Amino acid sequence: MRIIVKMIFGAHLYGTATPNSDLDYKGIFLPSKAELLLGRIPKSHRYSTGREESRNTKNDIDIDLYSLHHFIKLACDGQTVAMDMLHAPDNMILQKSEIWDEIVKNRRKFYTRNLSSLADYVRRQASKYGIKGSRIDAALQILEILKKEDSSQKIREIWDQLPRNDHCYDVAPDPNGIRQYQMCGKLFQESATVGYLIPIVEKFYNDYGRRAKLAAENKRIDWKAVSHALRAAYQTKEILTENTITFPLETADFLMKVKDGHLDYLTQVGPALEILMEDVQRLALTSKLPEAVDREFWDRFICDTLERELF
Image 1 (cartoon, rainbow, N blue to C red):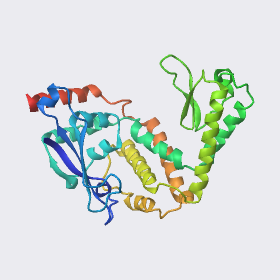
Image 2: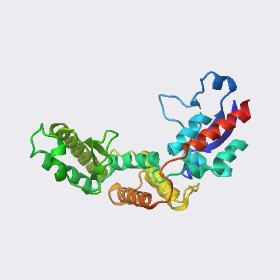
Image 3: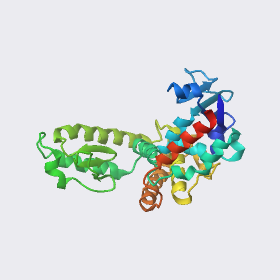
């Protein structure tokens, strides 16, 4: 197997490692000529000394190697793992080739104002653990409107009555021209009936209220997941403002405190996540980065690399 790059990853890259942190490696490999010609290029190879039924210990090692094709796809999609790898400093690189140098040289071609995968990950975590009252208020406002209508009525008939705010707004029509409305991350088409919407909005309202209460009490919070969401938000903001990601992270100390559950969610963590989300959304609107990745460039890069290295 020809290695394009192999690097230290995870907490050791971010600057959040503790004496109990396991070793995590990531890398990219070049497929063989046979794998290419037979159309059998694997997405990745994974090796681990840990046991599937238990968490890794500080003595365990995880290695994930992505094929060149799959890594480029991950990066084009704005996936967090690819963005992290693209910005790993030299002291984290254990092995590399000229192919990796060329990828890093052009890494800004993966940047877009959307950075959808990074933003979506942060948004999911904020929605799961967030405690900002306006989301609950928005859901309640919609419920009050819906419950005044006949269950068989379609929402296109009450379209102008639906609230528009930070959490509820119109989005672009689908490919068939059908109008769409988003409520706290949930997307509805104008053809949906009131009876269909009510139980969905009620479930969101009840679940969100329960999570908000638990968050306020610092209970049942996946602190590791929240720390990852904050990290992704900081990284997205840095790309939108500085066109790079710097490791180790300047916010590493704060992220470690979050990860270890040493901070209060209600007064410290939740507000920080909410502010970051708002910053990222605002910056994305004014960013001069392109709307989408130039995938033709990366398709040519893959073809040229394979032709040069394998034939």
